[in-house]
Amino acid sequence: MKTALITGGAQRIGAQITKTLHAHDYNIIIHYRNSNKEAQTLANELNQLRANSATLIQAELSDLQALKTLANTIKQLDVLVNNASVFYPTSMQNANENDWNTIINTNLMAPFFLSQSLLAALSENKGCIINIVDIHAQRPLKNHAIYNISKAGVAMMTQALAKELAPEIRVCGVAPGSILWPENQAKLNDEQKDKMLNKIPLNKQGSAEDIANTVLFLATSPYITGQIISVDGGRTLNQ
Image (cartoon, rainbow, N blue to C red):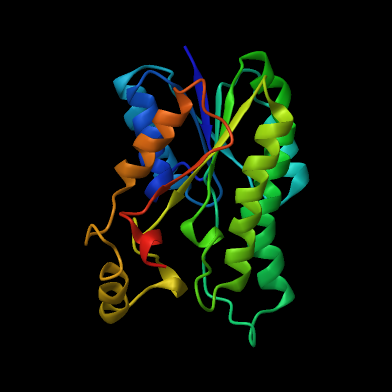
């Protein structure tokens, strides 16, 4: 049976990716940072469906030593989904070094070095890496410069590693559009939501299932590498 590691796999899109891959007979390693309660609940749910099919790993992925410790515990792996990320506005006037380090280290540095640390396990099984990118990797979102830069880096990393790691490992990406409304300091008001939806040709928000199904498609498509699929309701057509 194949094994998948999903970073940030306890909540939101990550949780749906976890559930979808599990439903298609993957054993799951759920990584989380602070979401212990949600991770435990999800793992229990999956293990009730299929015994010993889900395990948990807690780590701060922007800490390279913690990242390497995590990687050393994984002996078998077929799919790595680099999903964990942070998102909040950073205007050019107000952005600081802490914002830069937090966003770049979590969104870009961590996926790169986690992928590096798991190369042996992935190579052994002809595995794949699937990076969750963003449509704003190519078309910047105003007042989110550092986030845009981080995701542009992930997009280039996807293509660069696909070329370097072939034929042993495939590397692909999924670029979500408007899927789940952001939370906390990135929360949108109703006017901002309506403005965003009006730019989507399909005139609706996507679902976490849309992203998870695309991840599953890429994980099970052995002749696809280096591709980033936008799942955005056509949003990029209007940018």
